[in-house]
Length: 133
Image (tube, rainbow, N blue to C red):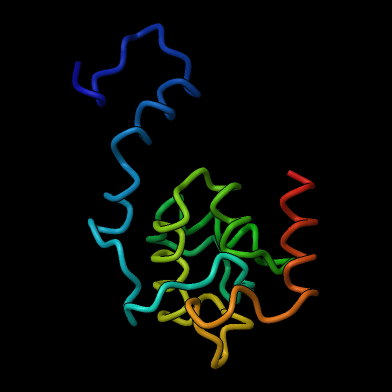
């Protein structure tokens, strides 16, 4: 069965689950890396700068901007909220930051390979956010 040929009696949520079974990498145009080729650490905090009501945004990008418009969220938290793999979320966050719609906090000179987090407070913040899910 083609994943896009849904039975007529299929619930909307079930149809969404089937769509995302084949769709995550289509969201990034097949890309698996950020534009800088440096992956964002999962604890990187993100702040939305643009309105999620802009014309032309994909549903995933709109949701990211909605979630980060009033609070900072980590890449891991966004991944959980939007129901997309962390790798895909890293690409989307990077794209939104490159277009000036999102601000990335806490990456500075710390790379993902040199240190697991920028500070204990960031780890506590991520843990508290994940626990609240």
